[in-house]
Length: 241
Image (cartoon, rainbow, N blue to C red):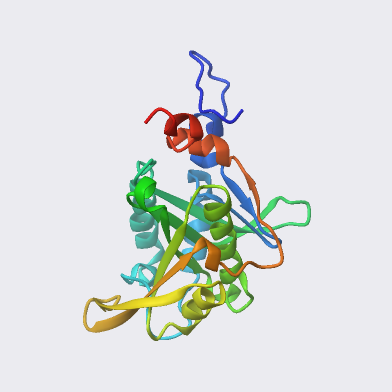
């Protein structure tokens, strides 16, 4: 069923049926991306508190990952909950947990996050993204793979026409991922560092769908049509405007 319909008085419905963001699933050769759930929170806190930064500089907008595991649990999970109401059609935010993909297609351990969001989406058709991986899984190409999978979903299934991203000018791994996928530098912005103590230059990146440098594989996507209908972005809702 591709339309978002909820029958009356039916307690046997699945969570994915009543909240379609939980039904979106994106699979690449080595990874699974899906909306993070409460049952994932222990694994999320474990990955987030395991260490993300390899160097002394912090590439986030705030140093949330430097906090104690207790504070990461309090602050990060509160933040995850706060993004749930952003369900479109113009403003939306999807927090996709990144798991290893087992040979049978099931999910392995949670190793990071790939967030995708948009503002004024029906007009701009532009998505933005941010991500992280636990440090002991960096350097294996997972960051590029998870971003590529998210872009395939956005461009090929969700109607996006452009993608944007940003990185501090010293963050070479993030810049390499963006440039290897077809993003081009479109500007710079002066921003505070993660600790708010000194200025940094942030490189702005943009890419059109036609500029996307696709990998040799194609992402498998499930739950997308029902999600689009839930977010009022399906064809039947567009025809009613």
